[in-house]
Image 1 (cartoon, rainbow, N blue to C red):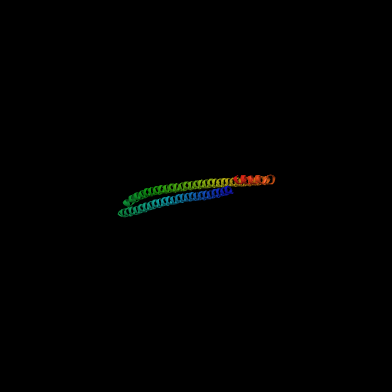
Image 2 (cartoon, rainbow, N blue to C red):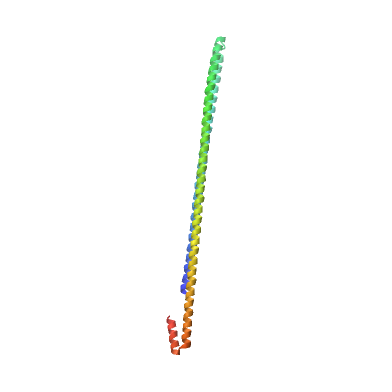
Length: 217
């Protein structure tokens, strides 16, 4: 009986160890999942910050272009006023000044148009760069999410395998305990049957000797 009790104690201890290991594994899995979520959150925050920075740079560039265009228009207006004043003295000077004014206006307009086109091209390139960057960040986030799902799946499979193994070990221990108990009961029954046979078939002296032998065994 003491041996059976020891087997039951061993089974209880093994069961407690299995539960403790399972809880520790679940805690570790949860910590790893939280770490992945934190890294994803940091990556998303960095992407948003980078996008905001690029948008601010684009706005600043557009503002500089508008200021340059406005300044150029003010300069053209000033030059036009000066030309108008200079041609008022005579028709010849007016005609010459008008030609110069027209030429300067045309050149200024062409130059301003070229600057505006260049600014638009730069803005378009910047916008395309921002879109490309945003797509790359999204791809990285998607890949990170895929890796996280794979890790979680692998961890779940390992946890399930560990649980099945622990369950198998527990079943084997229980079977051993049952077999030991059955063997012990069979031996006791055999001893009792042997003692009874000796009592019935032998003399009182033999019966006493048999009882003494049984006590020793």
